[in-house]
Image (cartoon, rainbow, N blue to C red):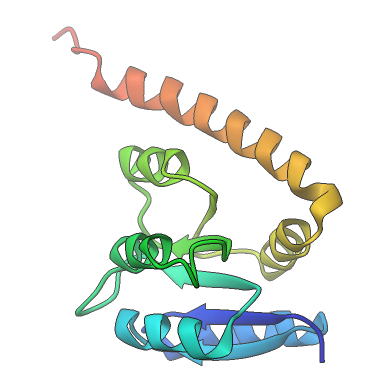
Length: 152
């Protein structure tokens, strides 16, 4: 088997789609359905990358990410947030928060697989960083426009 990915989402259909997409690409996929399971499996399974939903019951993905970052055993695991949250402020905060990527649901399985491939390939990490910087720049502009006072 290939490298190990932890897929975390409370929606069974999303977990199934992520798992099928990444298994077809040769990855071993481990599944968690909530934040607590994600933390446990990250410790036990030592995944190479985590695909993490943001909105989950009990513990959301951002809290999971904070706890992963606080733990020396899990802090270096890259994360792709996969979320239905379309709020631009939220996306900007997430991208600026560190070594994470952000895809919104519904997502293109091919795009997810390409993100995973790129994040796990050291030669492509520079491309990912450049893409993240471009995304942050675009989101900042959109957020700035949204927060401008409107003339009525």
